[in-house]
Image 1 (cartoon, rainbow, N blue to C red):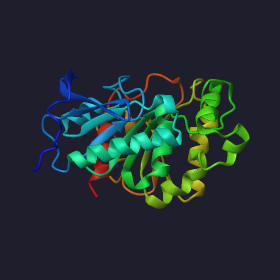
Image 2 (cartoon, rainbow, N blue to C red):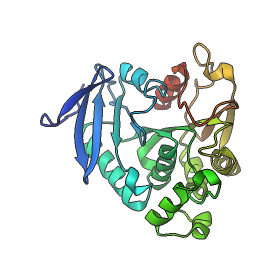
Image 3 (cartoon, rainbow, N blue to C red):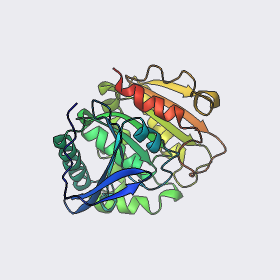
Length: 272
């Protein structure tokens, strides 16, 4: 098996028991975590925002233990704009040139959901699967919970709120890209989320994906939270959106107490 060629001069530290390598892309801090026993295909996950938050709960540690690499680049200041997407693409190109798989699995929590959706609808050929958790989906969200997000998006995108409603810059208007390219999604939606209001975000995404021909797979507690994560993720690939709704949860905590379902989703998305 060929090795991923990580530059020896990159500074390292220990992250949840694994070696993490630090570098930068276009002035943005970035890092790559190396599994002890990598999968032969050098598969990897990419947390697009809040990469230090809820790490064990979103399955990252379990995935590293099973041979996935894991990476992050800090593009938060760009808020998912074209400039940020360019940095993200260069980041992925650099990792692929080092030997990582040419596609990645995205982990999108909150703002990270927005960055993930913006990236996948711009570069669908670069993404294998997406895990969304309490995701921001709507660039034009006028709910009070978006009072800070909307002005930041308007500033970075150079579009008015009225323009964003129908703009292709808004991921909600690109549902057909996800459906046509057959990229599976696992979405965890918290019914009591007042930080990212689901009816203005994930619920609309689900509706538009369904209208575009996506198969919507509702998940119950037993499918996700118990034991082996049920059988829901035995067949992951294709235009599917797995939706797990946690009615009593707020925006936090992200992730799951039992990450078996997450591990199965990510792992089986590669077994094509």
